Image (cartoon, rainbow, N blue to C red):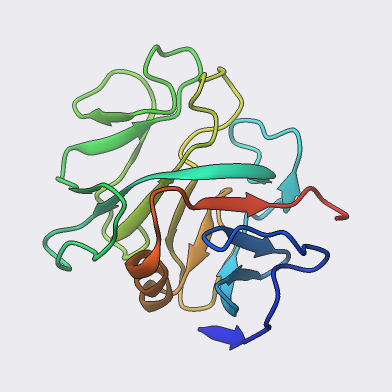
Length: 186
């Protein structure tokens, strides 16, 4: 849900790129003059993100692509690359595996997170460019923007928004957009 309509970029930012999305901890995302409610990781925002710590990493991340559940909604309208999920899709979260922090198809022998979920959280997923260029074992996997729970419960490290807000943002989002998450205390 949109929270307010400030005219400038995020607090303390006068040179913000028009296409960038800014996380405003602890519970908002600012984009194109609007604030949207969001949920962040249960452990807050951290500089030193580690696999399984429940923290949202700080940094500036490209929006790589959008994945969606074709049985629940049509392809999201966006200029970003879009792909449909299928029931065998997962995301490898095993730091010792060569496909760590990458989409996989099951059956798969290493540990992974299912992307085809019974709840609605992964009906729309924006894959973020976190720990992917290069991928460093143990520095965090499956950091997405995705659909929030109704009560905006904390995530395992992702950024979660209401489905309609996420779809609204994607509709005008350009491929050069980045998600900016400030370091704690800034």
